[in-house]
Length: 562
Image (tube, rainbow, N blue to C red):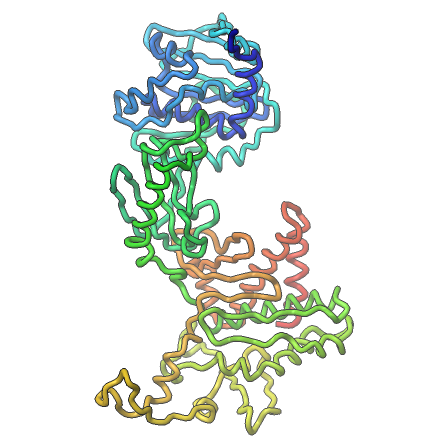
């Protein structure tokens, strides 16, 4: 009795192990890195992909390349010229082309040796017999030392943007003497005109090195919130990134934490190396890294390093109300419940909108009338938020000579019906007398944990006010629109904002934002309106030109009430 290998085994194995065109291209780029190449050009065309390098293969290197399952990289994990930690382990990467392509052509030259050959499904199927004959191609040799590997006859569409985005994540792009370039379009042999150099994402922040029990790497506390793709720590096995992990911490804890760790004594999945085998070795590795994060990283990390000013909070709340009321006036029959905006780490906590407001309103009601009626219902809570330091120390977004007139919220005890010509969302500031009318300051007797010497004069009004967190909120929840606004400040980030699910990250250090903020509250409201309208429109119409039209309509309708 004999145990046999099916003729279809290797074809099925190669077709179902690597799951995307990126995985196939990545394998070839990493192979070039392992053999001490200094430059790689990837040509992306709808009909083919070509990967070129400047190292090539001689007779001995080609024989190793043609042995499927060779473990020579495990025996020699360091490259001979540059001393690189090799990414390969199992010698199966040359089969990866079958995942998305029907055939692969290889042209290579080093010194006096050169050859060209083709591999396809029939060739791979013959491996069931123990060996297979590649198809030699009679063509002129390359004019230089190097290799050209052609991936031909794609089985599905080639997503150029995704391949480029994923290639930029390769850890080897950060290594010295190694560069990867991309050309989109027709292939031109070893030509750097019109190519784009791939640069790894640059995340500024505090860098914390790690070197414990064979685990090395660098963990970064970023200066800005991270997207889902950036968040977490990359796990490297050799020079290959296996996965990105939060190591059991919540996304909010890792919102500013990224980086990488390398560990060669953990076990990874055979062939594609895209997953860690969760055995005892991995659990030990995980606990070591977790302990390091708890002791060295989390104490230095903060959830948000930027805080919103009072004017910015009011601007976001204004836009939340206006856009939600526009939707109500256009499409709601009057029975939907809308939740108010909330500010985390502040005292701006509104009660839900009174249902009577919606029950008595019709589609013909003015949006600003609805807003004013709701705002009156929540005036008391608005006053609580606006507790602030004395006028001579309060935060200002523009020079004193340009400051807008400051309206005050009437004392709710004696002048609750006072009106003002100032727009409703500016009628939010308390005078000192209003604040004092709500406070009763009395000396405190010492508690059991206090000494009599600790009791001094009663705290002043200003000291109580400045201790409130309302003037420095970190996160604004636009609950009606379902968004959570998180500020960050990164002068090197060209983006004004970006979204990660329902989280809207605003770059307060962007020149446009700083310019509008300095002009005053009217400009802040209009600037934020543009951002929020664009985000809402993109959520309603992803990847559609209708998003721009929807955003413009929202802005036009909202500006009537600002």
